[in-house]
Length: 125
Image 1 (cartoon, rainbow, N blue to C red):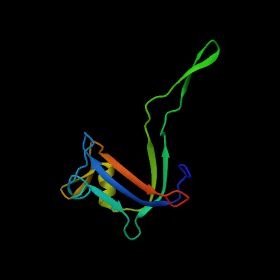
Image 2: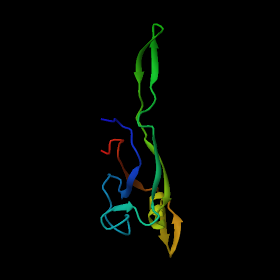
Image 3: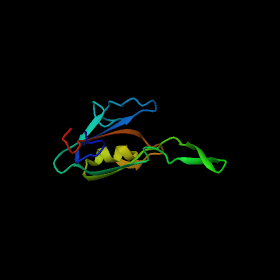
Image 4: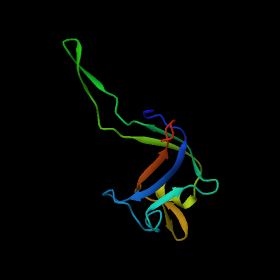
């Protein structure tokens, strides 16, 4: 088994969720009727996905001049996703733009969205 080494990005999918984490399956409020958007059209796709902060750095606590315990904060994972291209309407909804009188306006509330990055390891799994 190869561990967590990955090779390439097979596809990425996005979805917008409500405050409870439920996928919004509505083409106007969400990304599509199913709630999911596969980014894999002509010229569309992800080139890199850098995932950081899966675990917070430990804070050492000393007693008697030795490390006695290590505390870890709550992780806040972040993804820096580089796209070759993606549909404008999907990208604008993901960052919080709303359509008002035919134009795009940045909303006050940022959306919650889900991201699925599919890849495979060096053994093809």
